Image 1: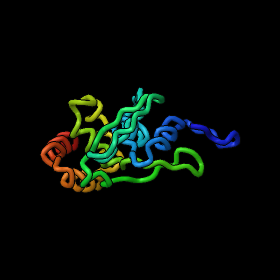
Image 2: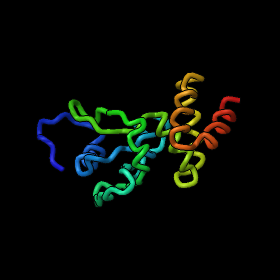
Image 3: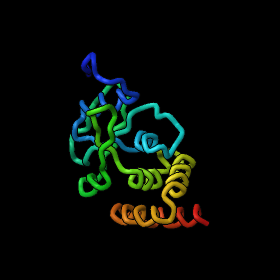
Length: 154
């Protein structure tokens, strides 16, 4: 991907490159958690999601991890992130990213998922719980989120 020589500098060129090559994709997983500052880790790859049943983009550089999410809930919690002045990319919200981390905690790392949940709850307080529960309900993950939230808030 090429950018104008006079384009403003950004720390998110990898995200811009991936989202330009995969315009239907949404930044998810560890990449979304890092952008929302819910984890301290720097992802080794750009994590994106595409609707299940669609073609998975093949991107050799930058390193990219592609997940497929159910088409019915793919658009749930999508927001825009300004990766550079005048250039935005689709990204799952902090609540959706936290719920996804807990749903996929065995795949990404349970410690990382619990850390993200703890930071989300500290930042948003009890008011953030209802948003987590709404997203978890839509994704069929209330049985995962409810006990984890209760344990963190205890």
